[in-house]
Amino acid sequence: MKCRIYALLFEPVLLAGQYNGEIFRKYVAPVLNSEISGVEIPASDPAFVYIEEMIRLSSQEPQYYEIRVRTQLEEFWCRLLDKITAVQIEPSSHREDSARIKEMLTSTTRTITEISEMCGFSSLSYFGKIFRQHTGVTPVQYRSGL
Image (cartoon, rainbow, N blue to C red; front, side):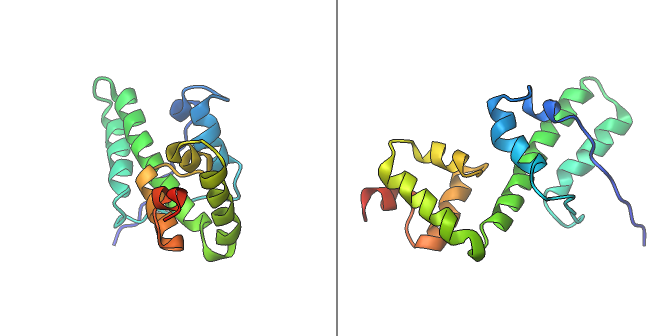
């Protein structure tokens, strides 16, 4: 049985486009500033497809491979954010997160998309799913008082 270990090393600006921009602040800096030292992605994980494709592109260097690698990296990063977000919304921290989200839903005019992004979710549907799991209602239902 073979075992391979790959490390994805890249400048954060490759993913974010620019330092201190909105994408960097919302989606890159929180991961860089967290206590996550590394994330293992087993070959059985659906996100591994993106890693394999980045490895293939980097080794073969077809035309425009840098752009293609960046595209794969963006897709992989979204999956990674979902995994990290799922870990961060464990029951121990749920009360504070839930209270903050509920407060924003009822006391601000921010859209649900804006609130989900402010709370670190990379996907609106995932935000809705997690919120519903913890409250029994969707963010829209909660906001409207149902």
